[in-house]
Length: 476
Image (cartoon, rainbow, N blue to C red):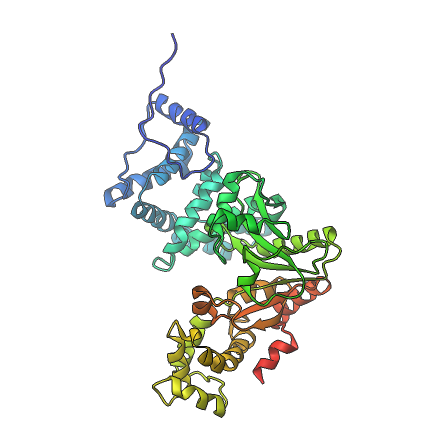
């Protein structure tokens, strides 16, 4: 007589991409057959349920019983998380971060033992025990969760839920660091494949491209097809366990000369350039796709690999550069002016701006002008503020830093990858987003193959903002 298997009493949420239902059901059925049942947890994880959660986590840590029952407990812990609401996931993560942190009493005891040791053998043993005490129990739990089918994807998605909570709950920062350190191993650059994305890729991959584009929205399938045209390239890093989901991708345009306007570059009606005659490869958009992998840097490897690949394929290419936004310029500039920062205006420039504001203070007057999101539509006004804004943008790029690094994240990204700031372009992106973020200004960062390593070292070691004479000339 065939043995009847008890039916599972809750659904497996689709958010745990790639997990085999059959594998999970086998483990869960084994758990049922051992006489146990899953904990009944409210999806919001209210106070009384937190005790059940702590009990479940503790049982996982104790690792009692055989392999099947130990594995089953980990699966149930994963299933509990997947089926929680946003509120429940927040409570789960806070519980994991606080209830399973480093045991301070134990740590102090190990420090005391270490101080009291006299012989080398005792000291070595005490050092091992001290090191072990520094590792919070939750790290063991995370390592257990990563043994789930595609458990590293589970942890990636868990970190995606965690990151927005850190500002309100700073103690989650330590849990975030624990998860990130585990993910780094599974998403090592040597485990990733560089692929060119073309129109013949699976529809699922193309849809992801449209969904993830973070710099210049892909508005339609025709728009996407244009970006995959003969004079366009899209390259991405893929992980073997996520074959249709790019981790990061860069969009490249093959052109003649250095472009100074993003709208022209992405115009679907523009005449294509023959790749065999193009002299410049422009990286005009780079998008990280996985929030759960934030801080794990793939971008520097991606651009360098693409430069190498294109150099080998198209010998006619002489320049490799970007057309990049300055996303935090306006967010820095307006408060800076409002708080009395030097507007770097000459006396004549201050006089030319005075008719457009209601104040005698030139800095406050410029801030007042920029707070009107339609200021650029007045051609006379736009021409009046051009030189002051370009000067302030150059000052922002070269002199304003966060610690020892460039304040602007895009600038930091390219400079740390070995590029330099080549050109600044006025009204290169007059879109609503471009005006709001960077007053329409865009930059060319160039990647000169022979100087990438030198530039990278100068920026990270000597903290030098590498910029051309034409950029520095705006400060005069």
